[in-house]
Amino acid sequence: MIHLENISKLYSGDVMALDDITLDIESGEFVSLVGMSGAGKTTLVKILIAAERVDKGKVVISDWDITKIHRSDIPFLRRQIGVVFQDYKLLEKKTVYENIAFALQVCGSAPSLIKKLVPDTLHIVNLNDNYPNELSGGEKQRVAIARALVHAPKILIADEPTGNLDMINSQEILDLFLNINKIGITVLLVTHNKDLVDSIKKRVIVLENGKVYSDKTKSKYSL
Image 1 (cartoon, rainbow, N blue to C red):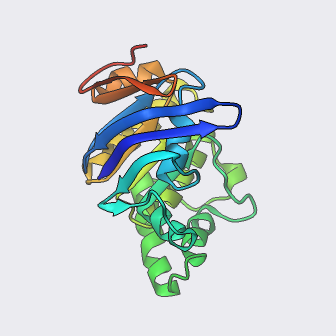
Image 2 (image 1 turned 90 degrees about the horizontal axis):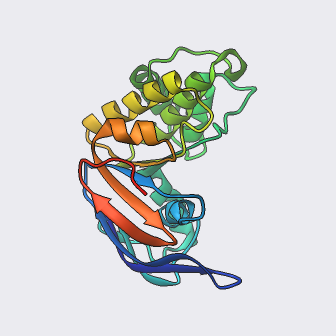
């Protein structure tokens, strides 16, 4: 599903963000990616969605070598990889339904398809149609997750999705990710939240100084 082979990323000023990383994440896995600030987590996410390119190595997503992906192919790649960030990036003047529908509209989806997919996706995240200013932080994050899911991606990347939430809402969002994983979607959770990672008891990859410090199945957050 995801294959990284000896990838490295060097920024200006000789900052080695990623240093000769080799990783495989199989279809249907739930993986937590952890590490201190500056460990390389965000850079890795950017490489997976083709927001950054590696300086060395090979990046394969679902048997597609994206190492030198053409700019015109990036939107297609991002429809296969749903991404959820800490900040919800919602359109405040659009309803929940309209926020999710907009993700399909910009891709040219037919109105009939939008009418089918949006309610189905709202059902998955257990939301009704409101405006963002009427929602709690946890509900806003559910909208962001729904928007990421509406394209039926094979992979869902969540980059610090609970950073703005309290523990109760964080646990609810985690439960949602676990349920999404149960329907066959590969989940990569990037987080600093030790309690959440420890409660999952699934694979944990630890980055440190741009390298893989540890990679263990059914593990806990350990640095």
